[in-house]
Image 1 (tube, helix red, strand yellow):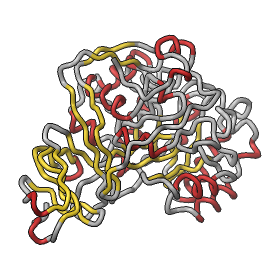
Image 2: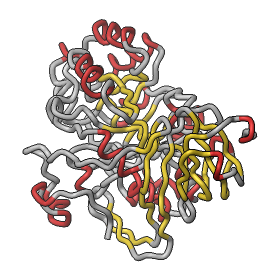
Image 3: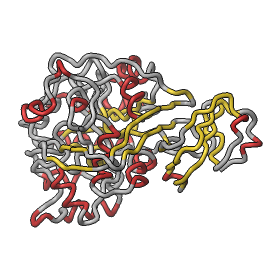
Image 4: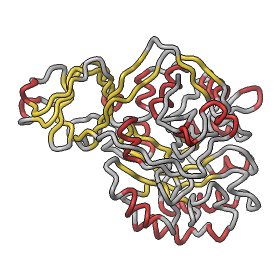
Length: 413
């Protein structure tokens, strides 16, 4: 914490909120001062006259801007992508990690038209497949798209925003080619010295084939999937090889999405002390229609599974930053970028939340985003683009949440 009297006049003071900053062990009522786009002070009482603008955060939760470690924000070029800034403004997410939407051939467009113009921060994992996620799946069906040499050149030319490698490994993406794409993704990650995020769900390949290619520091996304890649093995005990890898540093990431979060698996693993290291959304054209909806809803599910508010925030701020070596983000440390999220926490309601299979759990808590600040400026609320023509939910979810024609930013009821 800094001495506010030495900082000069502040641009903005976020006053009187309950600040939760796990990176710095802060959890209590503090004021947060911002100057020149940076955190200038975090103190119990800062003179209101020292700031040009004061935002009264009394009764609100104030956190570092959320980092969503699994997203798809390549709007208009891929099957999945949403536009990042409108969702950032209403959800508290200040940093998006797009995971594999772009491959080598489409990455220049991602950089020029998505990451560059965005007011929220946009980073990427490069898809090993040179065509990326243009279509819903099948990107590895042609082994010629597993061009490690080309992908390495793209990484080396874009290390400022490419933070890792992504490979979806399931029965659709690898149809007919087996474990080969994961072998090549492992080779690429090792060549460029970056973490590999591996998507799991339904085989083939099997988890027994996938596990040997995972390393400490890698990210296993959809870690609480209900598919046959579930890491909850026989007798509802975590697979021993996964436990060993996790103990050694394999990062378990939620990646909720439309099909990749199961309450039974979550409860089974958390009951054994296996907590997610990162809570992410896998946000895309379908997932924003439900049951995922957005980051605050996803975090609320884990609050109602018994995690503390501080632990939930940590997994969407400092732990997410650590996973991809973004040392300046996910923190309210003095001198760091003033990326800040504000929320109301409702604690005595009656809400229903669903997993991807539409299993229901009731809860009393939910987070509601109120403001999102990036580089010291609040993001304006802005309209979201209409959903793409193909953006329909699976039948079992559409029966509850309706058709894309009825879409609006939604919340559990």
